[in-house]
Image: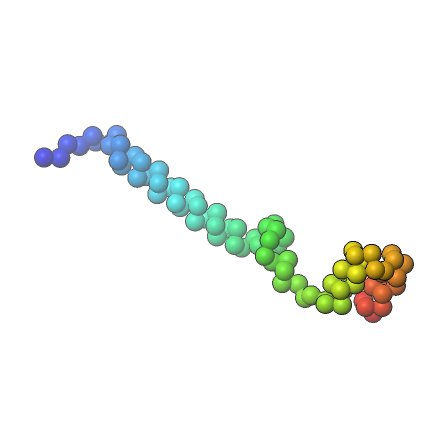
Length: 81
């Protein structure tokens, strides 16, 4: 024989909380996906900008100290035009 607690059934109460937590989580996950491309989330999307291998090499050489700041600026200007 099953005993009923009526409206205050503990299992039913926690089941409702779990359902609402899942619903809110799904809504937040959808909103997070929609806002990725609008700069609100750092991470993956900034990697989809076109890469310039020449600028990467130039930055690396400047970081290593192989070229001066003036050379860096000059070469950067040449690459951007």
